[in-house]
Image (cartoon, rainbow, N blue to C red; front, top):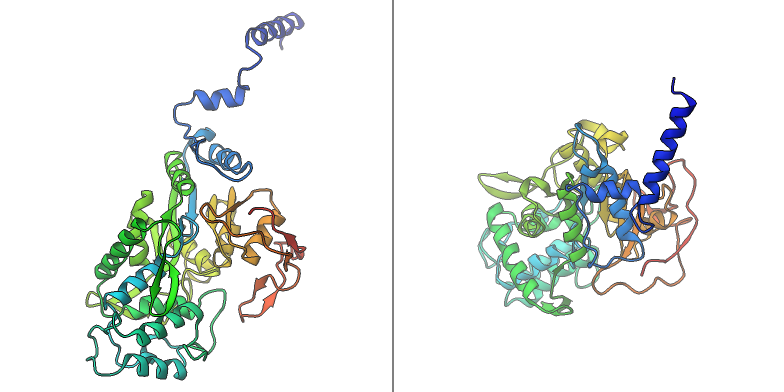
Length: 426
C-alpha cells in the first residue's frame, strides 16, 4: 500500500506539473491526439454546416487509428454516390451521353428489357424507336427525338410520354425499383468495359461544364454538370488515412460507378453497384441478386434495404436471408452517408456517424432530425443546396415506404413513432 506521505508527494508533483503548463495548452486527451503523427485530420478550410466537421472528426478519432486500439477488423465506411459524393446524377449523365451518341442497342422486344415493363411502354418504345434497325444494332437516338424522349421519360418518371405507367406488377419497394434496374438492362449487348467508357466520356463532359449548366435530352432539360464535393473527397481521404475501409454503395450500374469512384481514390473492389449478369463477355438484362434473393430481373438491387444486403454480403460476408437483417455492432459499418430514402437503411445501420445530405427526403431526414442515438450528421447539399422544406416532414404518418409501396409512419428501433420534424439543415 502507498503511504500517506507518498500520496502527498505525488499530488505535489502533479500540482507542480500543472502549474508549469500554460493555460492555453491542450487538454491531455487532445494533446495526445495532436502529438500522435498518425492522427488524420479533416481539412479545416473545407466548410461543413454547424459543428458537423467536429462531430465527424470525433468519430474518426474514436474509431480510427487514433483510438489507440490495435488488432481486429478495420472499421468500414460506406457512401452512396449520386448527390452524396457528387452533385447530380452520373446515371442520368451516362444515359444522356449514350442517347446523344447512339449507344443503345435495339432489343428484339422492348418487353425483354424488364419483367415489369407494361404493354403500354412496350408499344410506345416500339412506335417511337421503330423496327427498321436490326436487332442488336445501335438505335439512331441522336436524331430520333421521339425515341430518346420515350426512353428518358421512362427513366425519369416511370411513365411514357403520353402519361401511361411504364412499369407494373409486384416488387418489394424496399429492395428494388424497376426504373433503376432498367438502366443497366438497356445496355445489354455491350461489354462492361464499353459501358465504363461511355461513363468516362460523360464524366469528362460533365466535369468540364460550368456549375449550373443544363443539357437537353430529346425535349427533356436536365442538369448538365457533375461535381465532386470537396467535403466528401476530404472525408474519404481522411477516413482512409485513419485506417477505415471505404466503399461506394450505389444504385447505379456498377460499370458506370467504376468510371467515377477513382476520383475519390477508390478502386473497383470498393465500388458496389447494380451488378448485371455477364454472358460471353457482354451485359445481359439479368441482374445479380442478394442474400436469399436469386439472380433474376432486378428483384434485389442496392436500393433501400438492398444496400444493407449488399454491405452485409459483400463486405461482412454474411450470406442468405440473414444478409437482409441488421447485424450486431461488430458487423456493421462505422459511418454511412446518403442523401435520399434509397440510402436510409444502411445509413441508419452505422454505429459511429450517420451522414444525411439534405435533399428534403422524408424518411432519411426524419431519422436525421430525430437523432435517436446522437450520431446523426445532417448537412445541406454542398453545392446549390435545397431550400428549406416548408411545413414539416410527415414522419408520424407517411414518412416511410413499406415493402408493398404504401406510405407508413417512420419508427425507431423500439417501435415508437417519430414525431413530425422541422427542416433544420438547409
